[in-house]
Length: 456
Image (tube, rainbow, N blue to C red):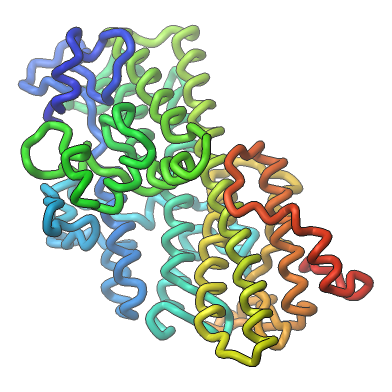
Protein backbone atom coordinates (compact mmCIF):
# COMPACT_ATOMS: atom_id res chain seq x y z
CA UNK A 1 0.00 0.00 0.00
CA UNK A 2 1.37 3.43 -0.90
CA UNK A 3 1.93 5.86 1.90
CA UNK A 4 -0.75 8.49 2.20
CA UNK A 5 0.05 12.19 2.51
CA UNK A 6 -1.14 12.08 6.12
CA UNK A 7 1.26 9.26 6.93
CA UNK A 8 4.17 11.16 5.39
CA UNK A 9 3.37 14.15 7.57
CA UNK A 10 3.87 12.04 10.69
CA UNK A 11 7.51 12.63 11.49
CA UNK A 12 8.50 9.39 13.11
CA UNK A 13 6.94 6.94 10.69
CA UNK A 14 4.84 4.03 11.81
CA UNK A 15 6.12 3.59 15.34
CA UNK A 16 5.54 7.19 16.33
CA UNK A 17 3.43 8.17 19.33
CA UNK A 18 -0.20 9.04 18.71
CA UNK A 19 -0.44 7.72 15.15
CA UNK A 20 -3.21 9.42 13.18
CA UNK A 21 -3.29 7.26 10.06
CA UNK A 22 -3.54 3.50 9.66
CA UNK A 23 -0.14 3.25 8.00
CA UNK A 24 2.79 1.38 9.54
CA UNK A 25 6.32 0.50 8.47
CA UNK A 26 7.78 -2.97 8.01
CA UNK A 27 8.96 -4.55 11.27
CA UNK A 28 9.33 -8.17 10.14
CA UNK A 29 12.84 -9.31 10.94
CA UNK A 30 14.71 -10.76 7.99
CA UNK A 31 12.44 -9.22 5.37
CA UNK A 32 14.58 -8.25 2.35
CA UNK A 33 11.97 -7.07 -0.13
CA UNK A 34 11.27 -3.51 -1.29
CA UNK A 35 7.97 -2.94 0.53
CA UNK A 36 7.91 -0.01 2.94
CA UNK A 37 4.46 -0.64 4.45
CA UNK A 38 3.43 -3.63 6.54
CA UNK A 39 -0.30 -2.88 6.15
CA UNK A 40 -2.37 -5.21 3.96
CA UNK A 41 -6.11 -5.79 3.87
CA UNK A 42 -6.92 -5.74 0.16
CA UNK A 43 -8.92 -8.99 0.39
CA UNK A 44 -11.34 -7.35 2.81
CA UNK A 45 -11.75 -4.34 0.53
CA UNK A 46 -12.45 -6.69 -2.37
CA UNK A 47 -15.30 -8.16 -0.32
CA UNK A 48 -16.64 -4.68 0.38
CA UNK A 49 -16.69 -4.05 -3.36
CA UNK A 50 -18.43 -7.40 -3.89
CA UNK A 51 -21.06 -6.53 -1.29
CA UNK A 52 -21.71 -3.08 -2.75
CA UNK A 53 -21.95 -4.55 -6.25
CA UNK A 54 -24.24 -7.37 -5.11
CA UNK A 55 -26.58 -4.80 -3.59
CA UNK A 56 -26.73 -3.10 -6.99
CA UNK A 57 -27.77 -6.25 -8.88
CA UNK A 58 -30.35 -7.76 -6.50
CA UNK A 59 -33.12 -5.62 -7.94
CA UNK A 60 -32.28 -6.76 -11.48
CA UNK A 61 -33.51 -10.30 -10.90
CA UNK A 62 -30.53 -11.96 -12.60
CA UNK A 63 -29.57 -14.86 -10.36
CA UNK A 64 -26.41 -15.66 -12.31
CA UNK A 65 -25.17 -12.12 -11.87
CA UNK A 66 -26.07 -12.08 -8.18
CA UNK A 67 -24.13 -15.29 -7.63
CA UNK A 68 -21.19 -13.78 -9.48
CA UNK A 69 -20.83 -11.26 -6.66
CA UNK A 70 -21.97 -13.53 -3.82
CA UNK A 71 -20.13 -16.79 -4.41
CA UNK A 72 -18.22 -16.38 -7.67
CA UNK A 73 -14.45 -16.03 -7.88
CA UNK A 74 -14.00 -15.60 -11.60
CA UNK A 75 -11.79 -12.96 -13.16
CA UNK A 76 -13.11 -9.83 -14.82
CA UNK A 77 -15.84 -8.90 -12.35
CA UNK A 78 -16.60 -5.20 -12.66
CA UNK A 79 -16.92 -3.12 -9.50
CA UNK A 80 -20.42 -1.70 -9.86
CA UNK A 81 -20.14 0.33 -6.67
CA UNK A 82 -18.16 2.40 -5.84
CA UNK A 83 -17.57 3.38 -9.46
CA UNK A 84 -16.11 6.56 -10.92
CA UNK A 85 -18.47 9.42 -11.59
CA UNK A 86 -18.04 13.06 -12.48
CA UNK A 87 -16.08 14.78 -9.75
CA UNK A 88 -15.27 11.56 -7.90
CA UNK A 89 -12.78 9.31 -9.69
CA UNK A 90 -12.16 5.81 -8.35
CA UNK A 91 -8.78 4.15 -8.90
CA UNK A 92 -9.97 0.55 -9.33
CA UNK A 93 -12.68 -0.67 -11.70
CA UNK A 94 -12.39 -4.48 -11.31
CA UNK A 95 -12.46 -6.66 -8.22
CA UNK A 96 -9.19 -8.34 -9.24
CA UNK A 97 -7.40 -5.00 -8.96
CA UNK A 98 -8.10 -5.21 -5.24
CA UNK A 99 -7.54 -8.93 -4.67
CA UNK A 100 -7.96 -12.01 -6.83
CA UNK A 101 -10.16 -15.01 -6.20
CA UNK A 102 -12.31 -13.50 -3.44
CA UNK A 103 -15.98 -14.16 -2.74
CA UNK A 104 -18.46 -13.24 0.00
CA UNK A 105 -20.26 -16.48 0.72
CA UNK A 106 -17.37 -18.64 1.90
CA UNK A 107 -16.50 -16.03 4.57
CA UNK A 108 -20.04 -15.82 5.96
CA UNK A 109 -21.00 -17.10 9.41
CA UNK A 110 -21.61 -20.86 9.36
CA UNK A 111 -23.72 -20.98 12.52
CA UNK A 112 -27.50 -21.25 12.73
CA UNK A 113 -29.68 -18.16 12.36
CA UNK A 114 -32.73 -18.64 14.59
CA UNK A 115 -34.46 -15.48 13.39
CA UNK A 116 -35.44 -16.98 10.03
CA UNK A 117 -37.77 -19.91 9.26
CA UNK A 118 -35.99 -23.25 9.14
CA UNK A 119 -32.96 -22.14 11.18
CA UNK A 120 -30.58 -21.89 8.19
CA UNK A 121 -26.91 -21.03 8.46
CA UNK A 122 -25.97 -17.55 7.30
CA UNK A 123 -24.51 -19.02 4.12
CA UNK A 124 -27.69 -20.96 3.39
CA UNK A 125 -29.83 -17.91 4.10
CA UNK A 126 -27.90 -15.67 1.70
CA UNK A 127 -28.22 -18.29 -1.03
CA UNK A 128 -31.93 -18.69 -0.32
CA UNK A 129 -32.52 -14.95 -0.52
CA UNK A 130 -30.67 -14.68 -3.83
CA UNK A 131 -32.87 -17.41 -5.29
CA UNK A 132 -36.03 -15.75 -3.95
CA UNK A 133 -34.90 -12.34 -5.20
CA UNK A 134 -34.45 -13.80 -8.67
CA UNK A 135 -38.05 -15.03 -8.58
CA UNK A 136 -39.45 -11.70 -7.39
CA UNK A 137 -40.08 -8.45 -9.22
CA UNK A 138 -37.01 -6.24 -8.84
CA UNK A 139 -36.12 -7.84 -5.53
CA UNK A 140 -39.47 -6.95 -3.99
CA UNK A 141 -42.05 -9.42 -2.67
CA UNK A 142 -45.19 -7.50 -1.57
CA UNK A 143 -47.09 -10.71 -0.78
CA UNK A 144 -44.74 -11.70 2.04
CA UNK A 145 -43.30 -8.26 2.74
CA UNK A 146 -39.69 -8.77 1.65
CA UNK A 147 -37.23 -6.29 0.18
CA UNK A 148 -34.38 -8.59 -0.76
CA UNK A 149 -31.98 -5.77 -1.58
CA UNK A 150 -32.14 -4.60 2.03
CA UNK A 151 -32.25 -8.05 3.61
CA UNK A 152 -29.24 -9.32 1.66
CA UNK A 153 -27.16 -6.18 2.09
CA UNK A 154 -27.71 -5.54 5.78
CA UNK A 155 -27.34 -9.17 6.73
CA UNK A 156 -24.29 -9.82 4.53
CA UNK A 157 -22.44 -6.97 6.24
CA UNK A 158 -22.99 -8.66 9.59
CA UNK A 159 -22.57 -12.26 8.48
CA UNK A 160 -19.29 -11.56 6.68
CA UNK A 161 -17.62 -8.35 7.88
CA UNK A 162 -18.75 -8.20 11.51
CA UNK A 163 -18.50 -11.95 12.05
CA UNK A 164 -15.04 -12.38 10.55
CA UNK A 165 -13.62 -9.35 12.33
CA UNK A 166 -14.92 -9.83 15.89
CA UNK A 167 -15.37 -13.59 16.05
CA UNK A 168 -12.25 -14.56 14.15
CA UNK A 169 -9.48 -11.99 13.84
CA UNK A 170 -10.14 -10.06 17.06
CA UNK A 171 -10.73 -13.15 19.15
CA UNK A 172 -9.24 -16.55 18.33
CA UNK A 173 -6.49 -15.13 16.10
CA UNK A 174 -5.14 -13.00 18.96
CA UNK A 175 -4.11 -16.07 20.94
CA UNK A 176 -0.37 -16.64 21.40
CA UNK A 177 -0.22 -19.71 19.16
CA UNK A 178 -2.09 -18.07 16.30
CA UNK A 179 0.12 -16.25 13.77
CA UNK A 180 2.82 -15.05 16.19
CA UNK A 181 4.34 -11.64 15.70
CA UNK A 182 7.91 -12.89 15.33
CA UNK A 183 7.05 -14.81 12.16
CA UNK A 184 5.85 -13.77 8.73
CA UNK A 185 2.13 -14.31 8.13
CA UNK A 186 3.23 -16.41 5.18
CA UNK A 187 6.39 -16.74 3.15
CA UNK A 188 7.48 -13.67 1.22
CA UNK A 189 5.12 -11.08 2.70
CA UNK A 190 6.36 -7.91 4.46
CA UNK A 191 4.17 -8.26 7.54
CA UNK A 192 4.11 -10.35 10.70
CA UNK A 193 1.36 -12.73 11.71
CA UNK A 194 -0.23 -10.45 14.29
CA UNK A 195 0.12 -7.38 12.05
CA UNK A 196 -1.88 -9.04 9.32
CA UNK A 197 -4.50 -10.50 11.66
CA UNK A 198 -5.19 -7.01 13.01
CA UNK A 199 -5.17 -5.48 9.51
CA UNK A 200 -7.76 -7.93 8.25
CA UNK A 201 -10.12 -6.99 11.07
CA UNK A 202 -9.59 -3.31 10.30
CA UNK A 203 -10.29 -3.91 6.62
CA UNK A 204 -13.65 -5.44 7.44
CA UNK A 205 -14.67 -2.35 9.42
CA UNK A 206 -14.38 -0.37 6.19
CA UNK A 207 -12.85 2.92 7.35
CA UNK A 208 -10.43 5.08 5.33
CA UNK A 209 -6.86 4.82 6.59
CA UNK A 210 -6.98 8.53 7.43
CA UNK A 211 -10.33 8.24 9.22
CA UNK A 212 -9.10 9.91 12.40
CA UNK A 213 -8.56 13.09 10.38
CA UNK A 214 -12.17 13.08 9.14
CA UNK A 215 -15.39 14.19 10.78
CA UNK A 216 -18.31 11.74 10.81
CA UNK A 217 -20.12 13.83 8.20
CA UNK A 218 -17.06 13.76 5.95
CA UNK A 219 -16.96 9.97 6.18
CA UNK A 220 -20.66 9.84 5.26
CA UNK A 221 -20.18 12.14 2.27
CA UNK A 222 -17.15 10.18 1.05
CA UNK A 223 -19.23 6.97 1.12
CA UNK A 224 -21.90 8.77 -0.90
CA UNK A 225 -19.21 9.95 -3.34
CA UNK A 226 -20.15 13.59 -2.97
CA UNK A 227 -17.82 15.50 -5.33
CA UNK A 228 -17.61 18.35 -2.83
CA UNK A 229 -15.76 15.97 -0.49
CA UNK A 230 -13.44 14.40 -3.05
CA UNK A 231 -10.40 16.23 -1.69
CA UNK A 232 -11.18 14.86 1.77
CA UNK A 233 -11.18 11.34 0.37
CA UNK A 234 -8.10 11.71 -1.81
CA UNK A 235 -5.64 11.83 1.08
CA UNK A 236 -2.49 11.44 -1.03
CA UNK A 237 -3.64 13.94 -3.65
CA UNK A 238 -3.09 11.70 -6.68
CA UNK A 239 -6.43 12.58 -8.29
CA UNK A 240 -8.22 9.27 -7.64
CA UNK A 241 -9.78 7.61 -4.60
CA UNK A 242 -8.02 4.35 -3.81
CA UNK A 243 -10.59 1.86 -2.55
CA UNK A 244 -7.85 0.11 -0.57
CA UNK A 245 -7.21 3.05 1.74
CA UNK A 246 -9.35 6.11 0.98
CA UNK A 247 -12.98 4.94 0.73
CA UNK A 248 -15.49 4.23 3.51
CA UNK A 249 -17.69 1.14 3.50
CA UNK A 250 -20.34 -0.79 5.44
CA UNK A 251 -20.31 -0.43 9.21
CA UNK A 252 -17.75 2.39 9.16
CA UNK A 253 -20.33 4.35 7.18
CA UNK A 254 -23.13 3.45 9.61
CA UNK A 255 -21.00 4.35 12.63
CA UNK A 256 -20.21 7.73 11.07
CA UNK A 257 -23.81 8.35 10.02
CA UNK A 258 -25.05 7.70 13.56
CA UNK A 259 -22.39 10.03 14.98
CA UNK A 260 -23.24 12.71 12.40
CA UNK A 261 -26.85 12.67 13.59
CA UNK A 262 -26.16 12.60 17.33
CA UNK A 263 -23.45 13.29 19.89
CA UNK A 264 -22.03 9.76 19.82
CA UNK A 265 -18.46 8.87 18.86
CA UNK A 266 -18.75 5.29 17.60
CA UNK A 267 -16.67 5.83 14.45
CA UNK A 268 -13.71 7.50 16.11
CA UNK A 269 -13.83 5.13 19.10
CA UNK A 270 -13.50 2.11 16.82
CA UNK A 271 -10.98 3.79 14.53
CA UNK A 272 -8.79 4.92 17.43
CA UNK A 273 -8.79 1.45 18.97
CA UNK A 274 -7.74 -0.05 15.64
CA UNK A 275 -4.90 2.48 15.27
CA UNK A 276 -3.77 2.09 18.88
CA UNK A 277 -3.81 -1.69 18.65
CA UNK A 278 -1.85 -1.70 15.41
CA UNK A 279 0.65 0.74 16.87
CA UNK A 280 1.16 -1.58 19.84
CA UNK A 281 1.96 -4.44 17.45
CA UNK A 282 4.28 -2.26 15.39
CA UNK A 283 6.18 -1.11 18.47
CA UNK A 284 6.98 -4.73 19.27
CA UNK A 285 9.38 -4.41 16.34
CA UNK A 286 8.92 -7.91 15.01
CA UNK A 287 9.29 -9.63 18.37
CA UNK A 288 6.79 -12.13 19.76
CA UNK A 289 4.10 -10.31 21.78
CA UNK A 290 4.29 -10.81 25.52
CA UNK A 291 1.24 -11.88 27.49
CA UNK A 292 0.99 -8.32 28.78
CA UNK A 293 1.04 -6.90 25.26
CA UNK A 294 -1.56 -9.38 24.06
CA UNK A 295 -3.70 -8.50 27.06
CA UNK A 296 -3.57 -4.84 26.09
CA UNK A 297 -4.31 -5.77 22.48
CA UNK A 298 -7.33 -7.77 23.60
CA UNK A 299 -8.52 -4.68 25.45
CA UNK A 300 -8.50 -2.70 22.21
CA UNK A 301 -10.27 -5.62 20.50
CA UNK A 302 -12.98 -5.60 23.19
CA UNK A 303 -13.51 -1.87 22.68
CA UNK A 304 -13.92 -2.43 18.95
CA UNK A 305 -16.26 -5.41 19.32
CA UNK A 306 -18.50 -3.63 21.82
CA UNK A 307 -18.80 -0.41 19.84
CA UNK A 308 -19.24 -2.29 16.55
CA UNK A 309 -22.07 -4.32 18.06
CA UNK A 310 -23.64 -1.09 19.33
CA UNK A 311 -23.50 0.41 15.83
CA UNK A 312 -25.47 -2.52 14.43
CA UNK A 313 -27.95 -2.35 17.31
CA UNK A 314 -28.30 1.44 16.84
CA UNK A 315 -29.13 0.85 13.17
CA UNK A 316 -31.77 -1.73 14.10
CA UNK A 317 -33.17 0.70 16.70
CA UNK A 318 -33.46 3.44 14.07
CA UNK A 319 -35.27 1.23 11.56
CA UNK A 320 -37.66 -0.05 14.22
CA UNK A 321 -38.61 3.60 14.59
CA UNK A 322 -39.04 3.89 10.83
CA UNK A 323 -41.33 0.84 10.78
CA UNK A 324 -43.39 2.41 13.55
CA UNK A 325 -43.70 5.66 11.57
CA UNK A 326 -44.66 3.74 8.43
CA UNK A 327 -47.48 1.98 10.27
CA UNK A 328 -48.77 5.34 11.50
CA UNK A 329 -48.72 6.65 7.94
CA UNK A 330 -50.52 3.56 6.62
CA UNK A 331 -53.25 3.99 9.24
CA UNK A 332 -53.80 7.64 8.27
CA UNK A 333 -53.97 6.82 4.56
CA UNK A 334 -56.34 3.92 5.14
CA UNK A 335 -58.61 6.09 7.24
CA UNK A 336 -58.73 8.59 4.36
CA UNK A 337 -59.36 5.73 1.88
CA UNK A 338 -56.18 6.67 -0.02
CA UNK A 339 -53.59 4.64 -1.92
CA UNK A 340 -51.29 2.92 0.57
CA UNK A 341 -48.97 1.26 -1.99
CA UNK A 342 -46.08 3.71 -1.56
CA UNK A 343 -46.35 3.75 2.23
CA UNK A 344 -46.46 -0.05 2.24
CA UNK A 345 -43.36 -0.18 0.02
CA UNK A 346 -41.51 2.05 2.49
CA UNK A 347 -42.73 -0.17 5.33
CA UNK A 348 -41.34 -3.28 3.66
CA UNK A 349 -38.03 -1.56 2.91
CA UNK A 350 -37.57 -0.35 6.47
CA UNK A 351 -38.58 -3.73 7.86
CA UNK A 352 -35.93 -5.37 5.65
CA UNK A 353 -33.31 -3.01 7.08
CA UNK A 354 -34.49 -3.70 10.63
CA UNK A 355 -34.51 -7.46 10.11
CA UNK A 356 -31.15 -7.51 8.32
CA UNK A 357 -29.44 -5.63 11.12
CA UNK A 358 -31.19 -7.66 13.82
CA UNK A 359 -30.06 -10.90 12.20
CA UNK A 360 -26.53 -9.45 11.97
CA UNK A 361 -26.40 -9.40 15.75
CA UNK A 362 -26.82 -13.19 15.64
CA UNK A 363 -24.12 -13.61 13.03
CA UNK A 364 -21.03 -13.12 15.17
CA UNK A 365 -21.32 -16.25 17.26
CA UNK A 366 -21.76 -14.11 20.38
CA UNK A 367 -24.45 -15.27 22.79
CA UNK A 368 -27.22 -12.68 23.08
CA UNK A 369 -29.18 -14.77 25.57
CA UNK A 370 -32.85 -13.90 26.01
CA UNK A 371 -32.41 -10.77 23.88
CA UNK A 372 -31.98 -12.87 20.76
CA UNK A 373 -35.17 -14.88 21.33
CA UNK A 374 -37.09 -11.70 22.15
CA UNK A 375 -35.90 -9.95 18.98
CA UNK A 376 -36.87 -12.98 16.90
CA UNK A 377 -40.39 -13.01 18.35
CA UNK A 378 -41.02 -9.28 18.35
CA UNK A 379 -39.82 -8.66 14.79
CA UNK A 380 -41.11 -11.96 13.43
CA UNK A 381 -40.35 -13.66 10.14
CA UNK A 382 -42.00 -10.85 8.16
CA UNK A 383 -43.76 -7.57 8.80
CA UNK A 384 -47.43 -7.86 9.70
CA UNK A 385 -49.22 -7.67 6.36
CA UNK A 386 -52.61 -6.48 5.20
CA UNK A 387 -55.23 -8.90 6.40
CA UNK A 388 -53.27 -9.11 9.68
CA UNK A 389 -51.18 -11.99 8.36
CA UNK A 390 -47.51 -12.72 8.97
CA UNK A 391 -45.03 -15.32 7.70
CA UNK A 392 -44.72 -18.19 10.14
CA UNK A 393 -42.67 -20.74 8.19
CA UNK A 394 -40.75 -21.48 4.99
CA UNK A 395 -42.22 -24.35 2.99
CA UNK A 396 -38.89 -25.42 1.46
CA UNK A 397 -40.27 -25.04 -2.05
CA UNK A 398 -39.66 -21.34 -2.54
CA UNK A 399 -42.78 -20.23 -0.69
CA UNK A 400 -43.86 -19.15 2.77
CA UNK A 401 -46.67 -20.11 5.13
CA UNK A 402 -48.62 -17.24 6.68
CA UNK A 403 -50.79 -17.19 9.79
CA UNK A 404 -52.94 -14.58 11.52
CA UNK A 405 -50.78 -12.28 13.67
CA UNK A 406 -53.36 -9.97 15.19
CA UNK A 407 -54.21 -6.42 14.19
CA UNK A 408 -51.61 -4.80 11.93
CA UNK A 409 -51.46 -1.63 14.04
CA UNK A 410 -50.58 -3.70 17.13
CA UNK A 411 -47.22 -4.28 15.47
CA UNK A 412 -46.30 -0.70 16.45
CA UNK A 413 -46.18 -1.90 20.03
CA UNK A 414 -43.65 -4.53 18.99
CA UNK A 415 -41.43 -1.81 17.56
CA UNK A 416 -41.46 0.07 20.85
CA UNK A 417 -40.54 -3.15 22.63
CA UNK A 418 -37.76 -3.76 20.13
CA UNK A 419 -36.34 -0.30 20.75
CA UNK A 420 -36.55 -0.73 24.52
CA UNK A 421 -34.83 -4.10 24.34
CA UNK A 422 -32.03 -2.88 22.05
CA UNK A 423 -31.43 0.28 24.08
CA UNK A 424 -31.17 -1.60 27.36
CA UNK A 425 -29.31 -4.73 26.27
CA UNK A 426 -26.69 -2.91 24.18
CA UNK A 427 -26.50 0.31 26.20
CA UNK A 428 -27.28 2.48 23.19
CA UNK A 429 -26.45 6.18 23.17
CA UNK A 430 -27.85 7.73 19.99
CA UNK A 431 -31.28 6.04 19.80
CA UNK A 432 -32.29 7.73 16.56
CA UNK A 433 -36.03 7.81 15.72
CA UNK A 434 -36.87 6.93 19.30
CA UNK A 435 -40.55 5.95 19.62
CA UNK A 436 -40.40 4.56 23.15
CA UNK A 437 -42.23 7.58 24.53
CA UNK A 438 -45.30 6.61 22.53
CA UNK A 439 -46.21 3.47 24.47
CA UNK A 440 -49.26 5.03 26.12
CA UNK A 441 -50.57 6.38 22.84
CA UNK A 442 -50.29 3.00 21.17
CA UNK A 443 -52.01 1.24 24.05
CA UNK A 444 -54.88 3.69 23.74
CA UNK A 445 -55.25 2.81 20.04
CA UNK A 446 -55.35 -0.95 20.38
CA UNK A 447 -57.28 -3.39 22.51
CA UNK A 448 -54.56 -4.76 24.76
CA UNK A 449 -56.97 -7.25 26.26
CA UNK A 450 -56.97 -9.10 22.95
CA UNK A 451 -54.19 -10.98 21.33
CA UNK A 452 -50.63 -10.31 22.43
CA UNK A 453 -48.59 -8.22 20.04
CA UNK A 454 -45.71 -10.62 20.45
CA UNK A 455 -45.19 -13.44 17.95
CA UNK A 456 -45.06 -16.46 20.23
